[in-house]
Amino acid sequence: MGVDGKEVERRVERLQQAARKAGVKLTPQRIEIFRELAASIEHPSAEMVLKAVQPRMPTVSLDTVYRTLWLLADLGLVSTLGPKRASVRFDANLASHHHYTCVRCGLARDFESAELDALRIPKAVKELGSVASTHVEVRGVCGRCAKNQAKSSRNK
Amino acid sequence: MGVDGKEVERRVERLQQAARKAGVKLTPQRIEIFRELAASIEHPSAEMVLKAVQPRMPTVSLDTVYRTLWLLADLGLVSTLGPKRASVRFDANLASHHHYTCVRCGLARDFESAELDALRIPKAVKELGSVASTHVEVRGVCGRCAKNQAKSSRNK
DNA sequence: TTAGGTGCAAATTCTTTGCACCCTG
DNA sequence: CAGGGTGCAAAGAATTTGCACCTAA
Image 1 (cartoon, each protein chain N blue to C red):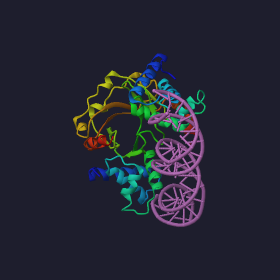
Image 2 (spheres, helix red, strand yellow):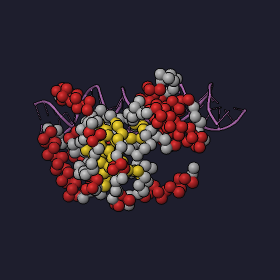
Image 3 (tube, protein in one colour):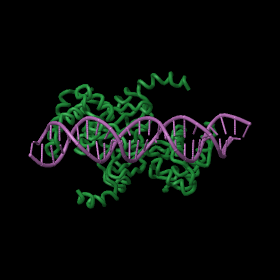
Image 4 (cartoon, rainbow over the protein chains, first blue to last red):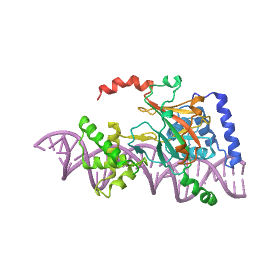
C-alpha cells in the first residue's frame, strides 16, 4: 500500500486499455496481481505479490504471478529492478563510476563522469536512511544488439 | 580483459594488503579469481569468472568462485550489480523516478526529482548503444536497519 | 466456441552447504 | 601444526515449463 486510490484505479484502467490493444485476456488473476503491484510502493517480489493476493484469491499460484508480471513487463506497464532473469554480476572497479546496461543482451559497462559523481540528492531521500553511494544507471540497446534487431523482429 | 596491466597489479596489491589486515588466507585460487575480475570490464558472473580461470587452474570449482567473490565483496574489494542474493523486484510506477535501496535489508523505495530526471549523459556512453532511460540509484542503510545495527554488531 | 490462461507438479538454473582432505600462515 | 580453505556432491531457493482443464472474449 501507499499509492493513492485514485492513482491505482487510473493504473488499472491503463491496464485494461493495454490488454485490449495487445489482445490479451484480462482474467481476475491478472487484475488482482496488477492492482496489488499498482498499490504498492515496496517493489515487491513475485512471492510478496502472491502473499498479498492470496487472501482475496486463495487459488492463485506462484507461477501465474510470475507469468503475469513478465506479461505486464512486456506490455510496458511494469518495470523491474535489478537484472532480469539473470545472475549476479561482479565488479572490481573501486573508483566511483556509473553503469550502462543493454536491456536486450545484458551487456554491462562502466563509464565515468565527474559531473555525475557530484549529484545532489533530494533531502526526502535522507529521511529514508543514510546515503552511502550514488550512481547513475543508463539503459539502452547496445550497438551489437541494434544490429541484430532487424533479424529478430523479422522472426516475430 | 580491458584493464591496464599496471592497474591490475595495483588492485592485486590492494587485495594482499586487505587480506593480511582481515586475517584471511591468500590462496592461489583467490588470487587468480580476483586477478581475473580486476582485469575485466565485463562485470562477469561467477560462471564467467570460472571459465576464465579454468585454463590456468583446471581444478577450481564454481563454489570456490562464489565463496571467493562474496568474500571479496565483504572485504570491500568488489561490488555487485543488481540486488545481492535476492530475487527480481517489480514496479508499477511508470513515472520517471529514482531508487533508494537499503544494502542491509533490501528495502527499495522510489523518489522523484526533476533535477535528476534531466541528467546529461556523457557522449562516451552513446558509443556503447542507444540510451532509452536513465535513473539514479542511491544505496545506504535505511532507518530501521540503522536502529538494529547496534544489536547485530554485538552478535559479531 | 476456442484460443489463450490457469494450476499443479516436475524441471531448470543459480547459488549455497556439509564434509573430508589440503595448505597457508 | 592448526584452522581456514578447497573440491565434490548434494541441498536449497528462485524461476520456468509441460500438460490437461477452464474461461474470457
